[in-house]
Length: 404
Image (cartoon, rainbow, N blue to C red):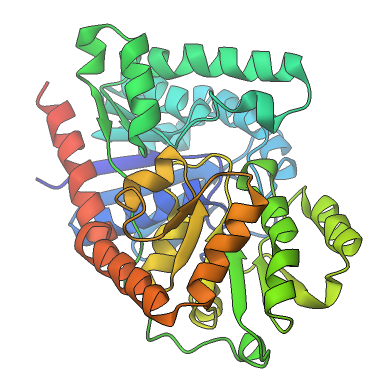
C-alpha cells in the first residue's frame, strides 16, 4: 500500500541537496528511499536563506515554511537552535490554508526530535493521520559534561525527561536511533506506552559512500599518514580530544596529517589548542564540506577518528565503515551498538587522549589489523545498514501504526 507521508524537521537540504547535520541527513535519505518504495513524501522544514519555498529532490517535495521571517533568520547549518525550534512549532500550529490543504490527505506525520515531534502529533490529531516521532539519541546522561552552567544542564535534562515520554505516549509510535535512550524512555513509561517504542539504528547511502570513490587530490598530496574526522565542531563531538591526542601521533609519525572536516562554534577553541600544542603544520581545518563530497575526502584517509562524548548510532562511523576505512571511536553506547561492541572498529575510552592516540597508532603500525578492521566494518554496513534496509524497518512501523 502506497502511503502519503509528511516528514517534519526544522533543518533540511538546500536547493542543491546540501546538508548540514546528521538528523536532516537521516530525514532526507529516509524520504528518498521511501519515494523509491512507491510512497509520496513531502518534507516540511524551516526556511533557509537563498532557497526556494518549494523544491523537489529525487522525488521528495521540500516545503520550507517561515514565521514572520524569524525561521529564515534563525538558520544555522551547524546546529539546531532553540529559537528555530520554537518558531517552527508555532508555524506548524498556525499553518496557512494552502499548506493545510496539502497535508490534508497525509497518512503519516513523521516528526524528528522534540518540537517537530510535537508538530507531527498536533497535525496528526487535526488531520486524522498517524503520528510518528523519531528521537535521534539523547544528551540526558551527559548534560553536566556538555554545558558549564549547572542551571542549563538541569533545564535541558528536565525537558528531555518530560518530552521524550510525553511524545512516546501521545504519538502512535516512537522510534529511537539507539537502544540506550530507548530503554531509558521505556523505563519512564507505562507498559502500554513502552510497547510503542522501537529502535531503528541509522543507515548510510552505500552507493554514495563507496570505497571505489576517487580520493580527493588535495589530501593525497600530503605524504604522511592521513587521520581524518568528519564532525560538527561542537562540544559533544569531542574533536578537541583528538587534537590533543595528535601531538603523540606526530611524535611517532612526524609527517602525519590530521584533517578536520566540519565547522561549528568550537572551532576557535580547537584552533587555539592546536597552536598551544605547536602542531599547526600537522592539522588542516577544511571547514564545512557538502555531504556528497565527503566520500572523496574519506577515500584519501588512512584512519578515521570519531572521538565523541555522546552519540546515537553514529552516521560518521557508518560512512567511514562503508568506505572500507579503519575507524577509531569512543567506547560509548551508540557506537558500540553499530560496531558489535568494537568488533568492527577500535574502541577507546571517551576523552582519554592517550588511549585515542594509541588506538590510532595501533592501526598505523599494523596494516594487517587495519585492513581487517576496515573489511569487517565494510561488510557489516553492507549487510545491515543500507538505507534500503532501514527504510523498510521504518515503513513497517508506519504500517503497524495504521493497523492500530
